[in-house]
Image (cartoon, one colour):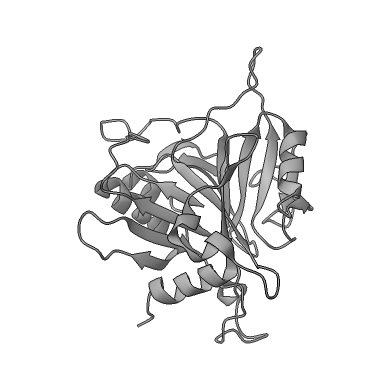
Length: 288
């Protein structure tokens, strides 16, 4: 996922919100050079993004957090942008809701989360009864559950104008129906993890990768349309070009801009595996 922030303070606060609030979240990569007017980027996640098996990974010694193919949150700040995408409320605590409603939440399953740190870093905690629903300082809704998942960044839940059309759209991108993922052994039957929402459809490229939960829009009244959350710049789909084929725009920075929009106004970017691997090498945080 790529999310845009409004200013440098929100940029720093959003990064700290994720690092301090969710056990295991770390800075994977960053791009900060080019002077004060340059776009600044930080990638956050729970493990390596590379689609190859990292050389440091060793079965059965290494944990899954050291395996490749993890999803990432790309926090992006453009100093030249004047758009106010999300403005937290003034006062001691932020109680401003997320803008738009097409993004229901990003679900994260972690061994531990820290509500106090979420609040300290500008998060708006909506409720915390068994699990926590919180709006990040940048305006992205998050649902966190205490549990274990192959990739703690489990899925993006989308409020759909039309679930069937959305499923057909994502099927063309290689996202097919998968068993709904849980991060606790009781699989939604207890008080600490909710069951799969009624009439929802879960799609993903594979059983262990980050997926998309397509939710039926429960908005009352005639209008079933959803309003886009401007904070979400793009949902990034990494693809492997056919052998001997051309990666196309995936070899340029312009490929980071959304190329299509799903039926619920979720922007989609396509990034070639070769481009991703090159970016990882040039922006990776060096281990001390």
